[in-house]
Length: 305
Length: 305
Image (cartoon, rainbow over the protein chains, first blue to last red):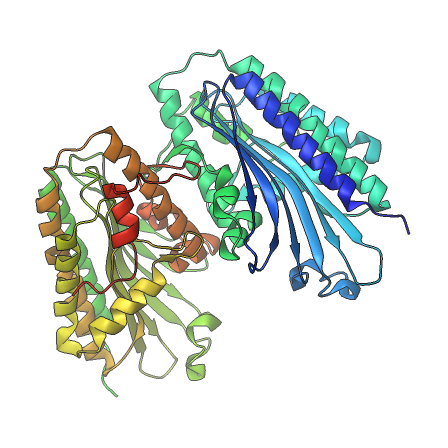
């Protein structure tokens, strides 16, 4: 069995967060709040984190990027369904998670997450799994942006086998789906969970490759779109579409829903919420409009490459 | 056993909806959209409804009031835990549900629901249970309003036994609680479910008493508050507090959450969503402010009478 090194993953994740936060500040011109937190003694999970968030910026209306590292006395049964030998073992979970809500409706919302779960059975080596991904949610669709985003995702996974991008792309489409709207959340990306293929070194390398691909996947899209003029119509549609983002995260996203129900740190979990969102009854886009094209051509399952 | 009369309940509920919609239009000056809908043949639940909603009014920024009546081939196991003899029986469910989001931050959000579930075991009489309640969610708290609302609720329940108001008031506090915020949703009201005490006639009478109490509980509060001047500060706090309403409904409200997950009519379920809502990181009200008083004095469990 390969040696595992959870501490190295923690070091990588902390550094990744700092790089991303620096890039957010450079692109926006504003400054992130950096809020270090620690779980109170006596809470079910012990651990700490660093929540970074820029609100009310010129580019980002709300951009949150959190790191957290928690330990628990025993893995929940859902985590060990396929690994009975680890049932009830102590565990450690760590990750970086971000959602950026740009101000300009032509700049897409983005989400990225990279995480590791380590089971720490007494007297044995830790067993680690990796998970994460990234996905893009435009209000106004641009083929070039979708192709660029998926290309960077595919290239990040290429060293780990040709099967990875198609599998993780499909997994992303399946996960980021609003069943109650019969809509995809956005144009997708990649998603993976419980990844342990090839052992710790391979999993950690894949995690780094995905984490490092985030800025190259997203920054060029910002630069293409941030100067596009927009008005009330685009703003109204953006606020309405952000309502869908709220619906997905609170109703369907397992991390958010169960995090809130099980005593996670609310303000860190809800970094993903938009700064402002709207709802309206039976809103239908005008046929032939760019808003209609979003529904018909972009937030559907589609091969972008 | 008393005879049951589900059709009479349907007649009452349809009439109640019309009265409430007429009162909304009279108070606002605007007109509700009336949208009759029917489940497609082949869907799991069969049924129909009438969704009424006023959006963008002078008084109500969004006020939705829906009636629905659905039939299903078999009761879900959760409905018959305490009544094994009815397991898997066909059923009918009907109800009126409303949420009003006023424009003026001094006018509270209100929610009311009255519903009946009838099990229709083959060759036997139907068995009916009633549920519902109403609760008030101010952004700015006023003791007079809370006392008035609770007084009308108590008086509506008084004919059915002195135990009803205290029980249903406590039930409401327990149900409309945001565990992840450690906050009550609002100043409470009454909530009940699975009510069959005293048979069909008593249950239906209690349902009518609650339904009929809604306008007397809420309209006087509107009239007291609607002319109060407000500005950017109050608007910002209102939008922020509406975010909590979204969180409760999508994360904790069983009707909303399971309705969306199980194929209910999305646009009718989400009548409860606010027209506009905001999120911000670690927002804390200024000590001694009316916003701070909401948290310390109003959205806590408290005896109002």
